[in-house]
Length: 289
Image (cartoon, rainbow, N blue to C red; front, top):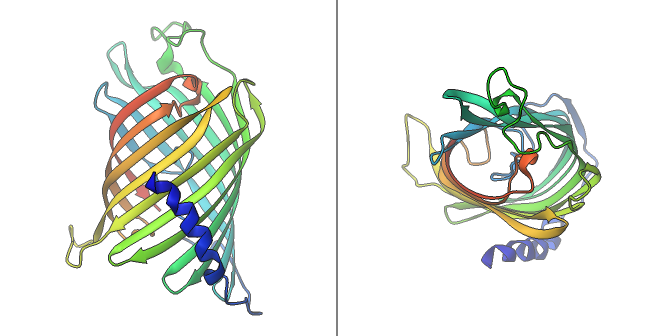
């Protein structure tokens, strides 16, 4: 598949991007504002503000949380930031004719170190994170409002996944198309149940196309297409795929609002249901900050 050419292109460009040696200048900034790296589109384990609707059953994926850069080190063409991540995503369903019942929730928190090197219109980046992920059933999973019997067979699964994660990637512009591609892995240092695979492999790309005169309510916007893939599974590997296409208002790599169509196929990212293979079409929006 063509998407697997992106890692090859990335590493072929490394010598050119790193050709200029760093100088001696260094600036340290506390709470610099903004983010050194916007989260990867299509990766469920990113801090987001938004909602994804599944029209087939009116279920929602609700994202709430934040990733904040606490300190920034700037030297020549390089920026290194250290930050924290606190976020959650929840499954909202309709239970006993009650809408917006929270069925299950994944909570994640940790820290990150992000490096970005710029030369011309290209940016080489790397991100390291350590994250705790736990998953829980919530009262929307009760059979009735007063019952402690769970809709999910077997009730809650004690789920924990503490992991380290590393990505390397490249942003570049070709004609009017801005692109971002990356590869990475997730390695669990502690997890339960023990049938989970310890090492996940990740890759993806994003393409943003802007027209010279495209404007909506006074704001420029881009059309985008993204793909996120992960090799994960239970006891043996399987592939999960996530496609998105839509528009983003604001700079393609800056804060803004996006509206999109989504298709996910793979092991459920709501980790109370991680054993299930699912496919979902969705309509959503995100506030990217």
